[in-house]
Length: 334
Image 1 (tube, rainbow, N blue to C red):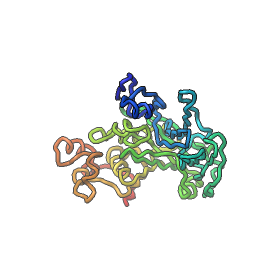
Image 2 (cartoon, rainbow, N blue to C red):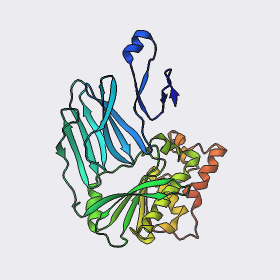
Image 3 (cartoon, helix red, strand yellow):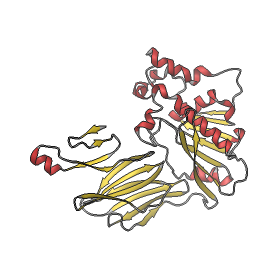
Image 4 (tube, rainbow, N blue to C red):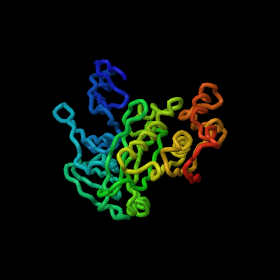
C-alpha cells in the first residue's frame, strides 16, 4: 500500500483519482479519492471510459460484473450496470468522446454476445450473438467450494443436467498458473460431445491463476506451487463427496501448465481419478529450463540450477515421481 500526502491509503488492487488540474497548477498532489477498492474475492479486470463516465469491469467470486462511475457535484457515485449475471463480462468498446459503450457476455451455457448502450449503460440491447451449438435447456451451471489442505476455500464450477440422478462421467479441468483466470465460457464441442450425452464438466479455480488478482497467483508461485496441486485434489474429492462423480468416473484434463498440474495429480493422487489427459505438458521440472523458452518460465517455477529451487521442484516434478509399482488410471498424453 501507498499513503498519499493527504493520508489516503492506496491499496495495490484499488482504483483512485486525483485532481490533475490542481497538480499542474500547484505542483502538489492534492487530495486523493477512492473510486473502487475490491472486497474479498473481488478483483478489477479492466477499465474503460466514455466522455463523462468511467467503467470498471470486475470479477466477483469468478463472475463478471461492470460498475459505472460518475463524477457529480464534486463526488464520485458508483452503480452496477444491469448486465446478465453469473457469467464472463467484459467491456468491448467505449466511445471516449461520446456516451456509447458495448459489453461482451458469455457463460457455460450461453454463446458469446455483444450488448450495446448509447447512453452510458442506462439502457442495454443485445445486438449480436453467436449461434448455439448444443441444447442447453436441460443443463444447469452451479458454483461450489472445496476446502484445500491448508483450509483455503477453492471455488469451482459444475455444468451438468439439472435432473442428474447419481454419479456420471465427469471431466475436471484446471490450469492454475501465470495469473491466468479460468472464467465461465461457452464451448460448442464440449456441449455437443460431452454435456449433451449426460456427462458433467467441472472447472476448478485453483491458486496460481488470476481469478482473485495477484495474491491468488502468488499463493502458488515457485516454492508454494504445491498449494495449487492440493487445491485441485480438494476439488476432485469434493466432486465425489457431492455425488457428482465417483473416483472411477472422474477424469482430469489440463494443457501446458495445466499439463503439469494433471501430471502431478497423476503421480500424487492416482486413486482419485479414473482417467487422465495430459496435454503439451512440462513433466521434468529439473530440466525444463533447457527447453528454448524455459528461461522465460523461471519467474513462475524457479531456477532448477539453484539448489533451493531444485529442492521444491524435485518435490513434485512428475517425471521423478513415476512409480513402477503404482496403479495408475489410463492416461492420454499428447
